[in-house]
Amino acid sequence: MVNHSAERDSPSSLSHDVKIETNATGKLKRKSEGVKGKKNPVFSHPVTLAKGATFREKVLESYGQVEIVLAEGQPLVFYRVKMPEITSEEQRLLEIVKDIAAEEIKINPERIPDPAKRQRTFTQEVLKIIERESRGVKITSGRFQQLGELAVREMLGYGMLDPLLADDKLEDIMVIGVNKPVYVYHRKYGMCFTNIVFRDEKAIKYLIDKMARVVGRRIDHQSPLLDARLPDGSRVNATIPPVSIDGPTISIRKFRRDPLTILDILDYGTMSLNFAAFLWLIVDGLGVKPANILIAGGTGSGKTTTLNCATNFIPERERIISIEDTAELQLPHKHWIRLETRPPNVEGRGEITMDDLVKNALRMRPDRMIVGEVRGPEARTMFTAMNTGHDGCMGTVHANSAMETIARLTEPPMSVPYMMISALDVIIMQQRIYHRQRGQIRRVTEVAEITGFDGKPQLSRIFRWNPKTDTVEPTGVPIRIKRMIAEFSGVSGGEIEDELRRREKVLAWMKREGLRDVFEVGKIIQEYYRDPNAVLNKIELKKS
Image 1 (tube, rainbow, N blue to C red):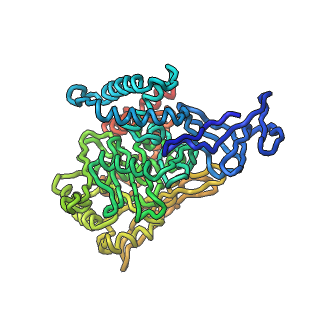
Image 2 (cartoon, rainbow, N blue to C red; image 1 turned 90 degrees about the vertical axis):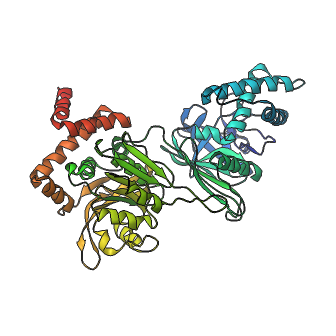
Image 3 (tube, helix red, strand yellow; image 1 turned 180 degrees about the horizontal axis):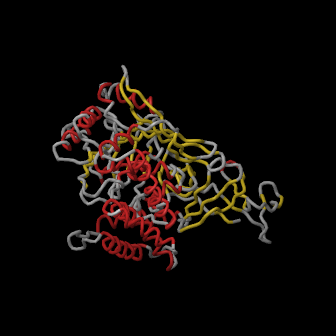
């Protein structure tokens, strides 16, 4: 029997409840039933979970330290981290080594400014301590490096969460308590349960305290919530009792090192090509009438990703100022200023709110103002800006429909007057939907524009998602923003339609060429602004 996660004394560990069994001939069997497991084209390995539950598995994908496993009878995919097993003796040694290293190893960042080099130097010093302290402990030469890496990970990183933080294919990491698996949200496989389990509340609280120290915050019984941005850009939210009844929790929204572009979300089916061309047109506004746009949706619906993709259409000649609670936007533009809120200090002073930053941004001569998430008094300030000539404002808001977006904007705590809402041009609704064949998908489900005011703002739905064809389709109603762009730029409606077809052609070409880098995509878009015919000629040459 091969046990892939042995019991150990550490407070956090790989789950020791998962076992894969084979007999002497290599054929798989269910030991608890005492019979050979039958061959199965999908589930080829019987696996025993805690309390005697057994399932068969199929490895869907394997990379680095990770195996993605489809488990028979399990509602979620199993995300297995392959890690070395640590004996109780080795665990005790590691605790001693960590204590000694904390006292003895002093590395001056000014002498070794490169973080990677500092970590290598620290690892070398830890290995010396392990060699010195392991006399009398049976450790093979190959184990020294493994133990050294584990010790460094516990001291400099985030322990058992480090392999998850290192996986660029994960969107979210969720620690939900003691003796429960850590959950992750995988970009390809959706929600997964892992074989990482914390056995002690102290281990979770230790990680939370460490994250709080790194970002210069505190979390305790008086302030039991933490919401912050880690040095790598990931967003962490942590809770401790009394607000989290069942113990401390950690939720990490990982920061993408390679931001998605409009071509990625086209590939994912989030929006259709004709809508992407329309989005490009209204963000740019032919340089004379960029639209004011809000992207609405629920948590995890991809609002910020779509906002980030839309900002790629802003001409590079424009000055962009973004305001966020936690910095998440990643723009390829050079003339971009990022502003981020600040919570009050332990004495309750020094807070800088979204509204403070929006008001300040208006004094910084912005061509574009992007508000990461509109949810408070800053909404009224932003709409005041829209009503005084600041076109091209963009942001996100939590809502479930275009009508609900208007209701949320006009009610406390945002309290935008009805008359001001008419400055908003377009609402893009995006949702996370469960698809029976494909699991969780994200789709633009509705696009509405504000067409006027008759006692309250009037909405017109101009695009909608067709679930039968899984495409975002125009509804066929006249589109006010296209007419406004035509009027401001002095062109006809037919010329606007020609321009949409040209932009659709450029997007389709980039998609076929497999362009994905945010700077590469941004370069083509900016080239199109300077000389559209040159870009279109390049496409024709590529075809021939």
